[in-house]
Length: 72
Image (cartoon, rainbow, N blue to C red):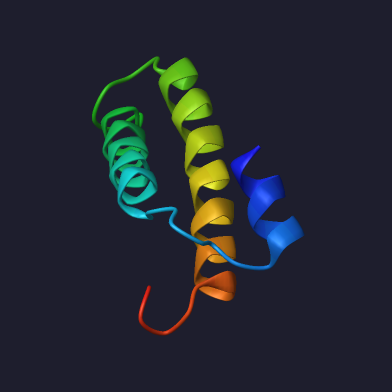
């Protein structure tokens, strides 16, 4: 719903990017933990957090596209 509202209105309004940045960092850390050289047999950890990382990257890209200079 957040993505849809931002695209529909063409502005991020009062949405903050901080929760999405924190989630992206969290997914990155879990993906690092799930690497085979760090923790073997953890394909599920990489899969779930890899998908989360893609979703957060899309949101942050949309945020940067539609945010004003001051909001960035």
